[in-house]
Image 1: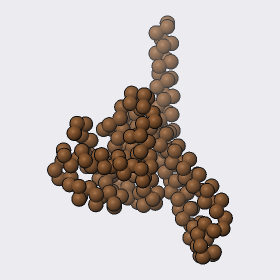
Image 2 (image 1 turned 120 degrees about the horizontal axis):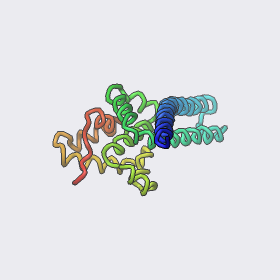
Image 3 (image 1 turned 135 degrees about the vertical axis):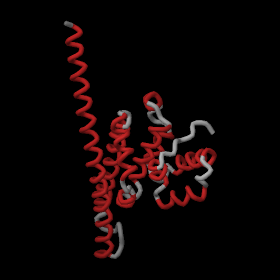
Length: 199
């Protein structure tokens, strides 16, 4: 009798977790589009103010702070969701498959490079981090540095340094060219280049 109820509870728990994962993945996709909208809104306001007042940030400066706050919060929530769902193999594979079969460059351009941070998070979750690492090192620089388009250059340099030693076809010149085009991490994910564990 106890086994029967235990099995039922396990089934209900699995159904609930499955539903939550699907729900969170849908929120992730929706928030990416919201982030694109927020960045386009910010650019539109800047262009409008430039042509109306002939100088950016002189008038109505508070609106920039509000929009930037929304961009930051949206980006933060997306990363939190991504950190959770990428531990589920189904959604990790689903996200990786989407990147490998779609042109992500449009999203990179529209989010001014922020979308690159999500692909970098995927790459690191697959090849570097484990659940134990993230549980016991939640504020490590390595994890946090992939969140920010400017700071994460150190993460990219570390990746490039290791890849050049492991894969001769990936030269520094070639990878820096991809980096400045905003296509390096999508190239690595699309072509499934594993991250070398040992230097």
